[in-house]
Length: 632
Image (cartoon, helix red, strand yellow):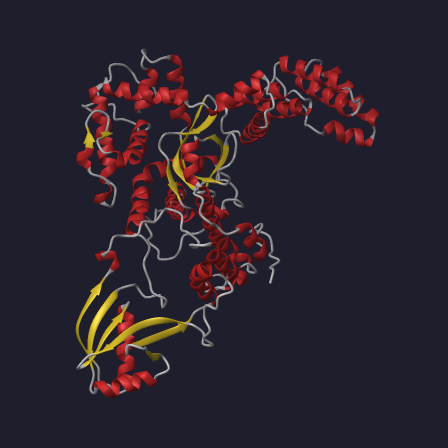
């Protein structure tokens, strides 16, 4: 067994002198005739020095027939590609990936070759029979579906195993923090099928998790007639059953042995025929076949919370995949990293610190993973196991946040609450005159007093006027006032004893009472009522993309002013200022990716979206890790 010569070595030697390259090729052939090393080096000399592609191809075909080390498959494939033997190269890579599906270099070659075949086919070009076959095999999920059907039938035929899986499902569901997420009574005993389709995705994830979870061989409910082998996981039991078809048994082994749970980030959902997925918790990259119905829901920078399995050397998503927004995935990765940290402490003989609640925002793991070194292979396995065990916790937290919706706040940042209150004062007539003369109050035509707050920013002004401009056109005057618009804080209507007040937070009510006291009006708070949106109104669901504006004018206004808005997410800095701070650029990149994620999904729905590439260029954020050159 031997290895191919390093690709490019012949060119380096030929750069010194062509005769030197030929001499080295002759010497290697003399010392190791017919070896892969000698044949690949001689082929490169024939191609680059002698300009004899036919001889180079003949030598490479001989190298394919020679005994070789599997570790040299990637380098051999590179030689074959340079020699024009693309089908042969992909065949070598496919065989290597069956044995080592995690080999990233081999996955890179598969990605490049299959993408080329796919592009030619899309343009009406012809692919070789083998190329077409490999393209079809890569995208086919038939074996995965047959395995799933075989597993369901296997469980149905084994009542004890069915009860065991149903118990695992019930345990999973009981770990969910919010009882409203699922109804345990909807579970059907026979394998955990659902009566209600609403929970199909959740149940599929729970079932697949149960398939790879070890059973207790001493469990009285699970009587094993034969030795199940090294694992008692349901998939292992299926694989070892004599009645299981050989290809299904092999697929079951592949699922069980390669199953990797992760937070798989999608950089480019338009990739074809496969997409690169990066686990933001470990840094592992996989070139995977993802069905369109899953991929279309992910969006750019979206994340799959799911297992990947390599069956016949091809990484695939399974039937269970929860789609997370970038920010949701960062929060999940923070939890996983906490568990990883504790496991590392235990491995070093230290005590685990346990859960550590924190009010701070999670690190932008989806951004930082691009520049970080992947975890050690041992810790990568730990990360997968951690995510598998944390699935109910992560799912529960994501769904809770989505059901709770965002925390609604007014323009002062106070929690939104619609309050109506009666406030009595010492002298109502005098009080109305004093307030009318105050710089923060204004008497409207109907006699109502309005209470005004801070001035609108440029972006807020433009966004507010955009719908009107869209309706009436740019030629119509929208606002002739010389005063800068301000936010409305509240309304006061005169009553016999004082005022009927309408404000939208407890803090504003207290602030108004303070103003009245400062004016010497001796206010007293009387009967009042409040509508609390989280308690009294239907919750706002999140997880879906957030529109940037109702019209193109509104979006353009947002795009123009956003770089100079002070944002809480950036510590009160503007995006333009943040772009100049190397240590803060990941946070800005995190925001831009949230925008790109939503823009990608909205564009597919035909909704107007901003040009985020233009925004990146203006901020100098084409590459977040490089110093910015900011446009002004």
